[in-house]
Image (cartoon, rainbow, N blue to C red; front, side, top):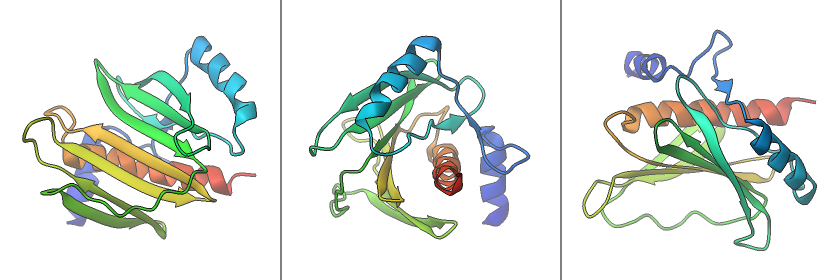
Amino acid sequence: MLVATILVAVASGCTTAAGGCAPLTLDDALSARLARWQDELDFTPVVPCGSGSLHVARITLDRPAGQPRLTFVVAADRSVFLMSQSRAVRAFTQVPDGARRLEWSVEGTLVRGFETVATAGPALLYLRWEVDRVTYEFQASLTRRYPSATLAAIARDNVARTLGAAAAP
């Protein structure tokens, strides 16, 4: 199993010598938008990481639970995954019928979620974790180019990135 995990991480192209993935760059317009929104947040946003043709295509800010939620839309030729960040506390309890429940740990941080199968729509991967009272959510549609194992490796790297950001001064 360890060999498969290492192969998946290498195949995803998301690893670096430092053991994580590189933060995705923001163009000038997205950087300016993030800087404007920074004052509305009571936490420091973590830009997702990835590699290859992955890039941040959009950033949104909404308030679904009264707290600001920042969402990075990461794309290649089309949307690949969303990574949201918020102080809003939402209990993780519901898993769609027929979905496979996921639960694993990255450096002691519990990651919970589920993976659905493709029926009426695309198969989905949804993961949630918390670091320093910030809730992170990773959501992706599974595709041939980005199957479950590849997206899970990218998600694990992003969990590790949020842990590293929390540890930074």
